[in-house]
Amino acid sequence: MQNPTSLPKIVRAHVFISGRVQGVGYRYATVDTASQLGLTGWVRNLPDDRVEAVFEGSRMVVEDMVRWCHTGPPAAVVKDVVVEYEKPEGLRGFEVRRVE
Image (cartoon, rainbow, N blue to C red; front, side):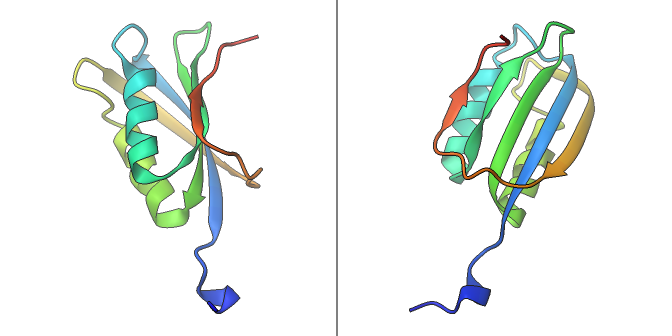
């Protein structure tokens, strides 16, 4: 049995990415990358041409994903990444969402 203090602490990063990030496969590359890293969360396009994403997982892996967001897929031109850390919600899987 593992010691509870040795379990990785789950963190949640709420990320807003701006630049040329819509119409370049950013959302689907985010799903692929986050899923490969074992993260849970979601990603969506916003009406103001930004991409919004939430990542939940161990701090180190979430930080790796946030670093990836600064570059994104090959066709993207990222200008800015804003990250807000929030309380994890215990999300399952990783999906593309639509703005409601």
